[in-house]
Length: 228
Ligand code: CA
Image (tube, rainbow, N blue to C red; front, side, top):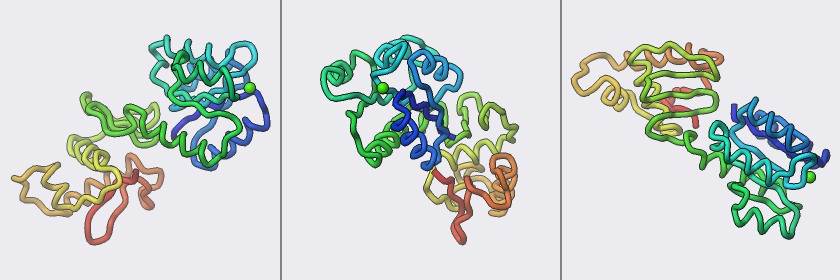
């Protein structure tokens, strides 16, 4: 699940943002001051931080600078929330290292759209040479390893190739013929049901309920699609 940390000391706004992000299906954590924010970022490793500028103890701009200097967390995208005025200039000048900013008051629709856009831009969340990611599933292509959350899954050679092929084409339907060609190669003379059998095995490893798959869905009469 995509994790978002909301750092905002104004309780009403914090609750509104948290509730709406939760409704969108994100796992949301919150922090109410800058120091708390830094420890939460290190502990939870969120996929995105929504960071208010005016915060007690340590302000948002300082938090942002500290994050950018720490190589273990510097990759995490940050959307800054700010009041109109001089703060905006500092953020826009990217002095802080923020990836995006929103000036209060802003509409929730706009906010959620910016969050989605930022998550799409995240390196690793789209197909990159080394890693494929979908929700809590992570495929390390170079190391040929698959993780679900922190847990490593044991996949056979062909299961790994099949999962990688499906995840590389998230959202697109792949026919059994295409899968056979890509995963088993042109020289394969076996039955198309080979694909079905391997999909079934994969589902047992990556689906919460293999009998009602949410990740690898069957497209009747055609093939399979990995849900994006
Ligand atoms: Ca504030």
